[in-house]
Image 1 (tube, rainbow, N blue to C red):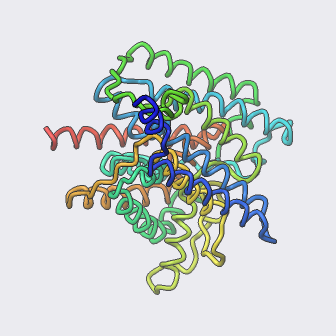
Image 2 (tube, one colour):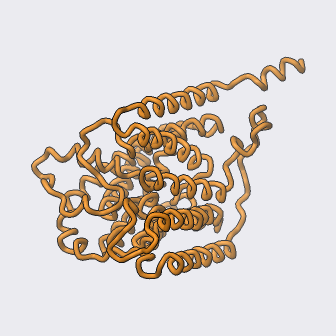
Image 3 (tube, rainbow, N blue to C red):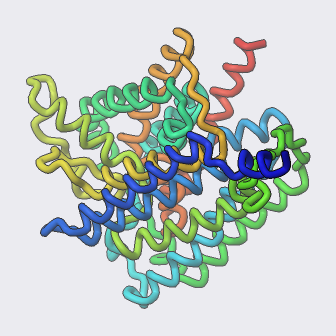
Length: 401
């Protein structure tokens, strides 16, 4: 009897077998693209970093809307503290990199590829609309990707909405650019305050926000049932419940710094925008020229000419990594969405797409990577994005109550 129980406990579950197959697919994809003659090593790194980030996002529930909703609903600030930790550590990591190849920060000379964008009312409105879109669809763009790995069958409709929103953003871009964006200042804080001054200022702001959150935080009771499998006994912190949010924040900061050093800042909307731009570019109503767009740093979009792109592989691997983690932790729970959920995700996705297009990125790109780079645009995006989340949350509270 004891032998039979031990054999049953050590037998691999079907989900674990599938998780191993997904990991094998990630490895095979990474090895394949690494050997491509053009950009092979960087494409391979995109696969590895995307997969690891997918695991981290899924395990730590690193979703900007979800953690903000936890605080608004229950005063559970642990998720928001995790985001602040990511920004805190990422700022230090970015500044170490910047100082190594740009010792004297100067106005007009920006770190290559960093998410440092123009400051205008267009950025503010884009961030506000993006935040409302998060509240309506229930996730930010990066979270919709990792939730795909958890079997969230409403997320594809949100991502379809993001594509449609990007198309609308492209159609309105030239008017916004010519009216405001082309003359808007691009402010990199180290160029005005130096590395030391800007770092101290931003870390102080983050520390103040963290102190306030810790003061108002109310611990959330863990309602997830413990696992009884042998795997849970051996690796309880990896596959049982969720990772502590501070762990997720530290890992996101590390991945973000390494990604910038190797390829580009973290961001998940460039590939979606490129798909939207490619699909719509052949129509007469689509702008032949997008004024000034390709000159800005951020989640840039292009008309696709090749199958493989760094950001595309990064996003695909993110979904696969999240899928493997969800399978192993028994959090892969597909459920058919209702008609209301489909419409809500589609509508919210359109707002996410339009907002991220005109703001030149999303919470992962403009906010996270932008703040880490010392860009004032990242802070502006964050303020108005969280204002949009609050507005959307209030609307949902009214209609649900």
